Image (cartoon, rainbow, N blue to C red):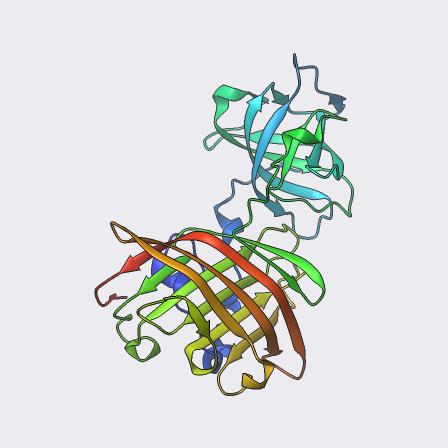
Length: 312
């Protein structure tokens, strides 16, 4: 169901009553659309000899399963060039950085040896330290390159503290939708708002999906029977041992989870902007346990608005 090529398949999975039968579906298949890459290192790896500094924007980052420190990365070169065999750094605005070797490069159609500003989006394989963790809030630079190349503000669509750790969520195609007249034969045909966020951390494959049952998501607090939530996946990318947490009234009403919509504005042409907050507790779907969510925030995220009954 979480195939990126299937719009409605990604959307309709919420409801704790069907969590067990949908465990596998709750895992994102984002990786399947990535080009296959070779993992063999070149005979020698040298620092980039390109003229001038390298600055490449990082898009999606995917950890290679079973290979710590190896990542598939989408990049767009903004300045300079990068080649197979180059030594590079990925660096954040706060100066945090990791050093890697570029071991493979590909555009959407073929293997390549070099990329520059004219290359568009290219896919590279980076090999580096086993403890490396980075995302689209980093930039690709020459070894020792300036942290000023990284985004000054996070590209995350959702940020929160979950069980005491920072968590950042990104969007994906059709991840934000409002069905004003519901979806035929789903969720009792009730209207609902769906907001879904995939972890920006390549190692963490969890996804958070919020469902608020309303046709008019005006500012206010949504909880109890108006709200369902699923937080599913593995924090360490272990697809064989996913965790499933959620909220469904009345089973976890005592957790006090609440979604507060702080702003909602329709902008025409089936679009809207929404902002809000999330706080409270998730409960474990299997077994016992609670997970605390604090300072959850999303701001001006774009929503697709459907004014007629949506047919699956």
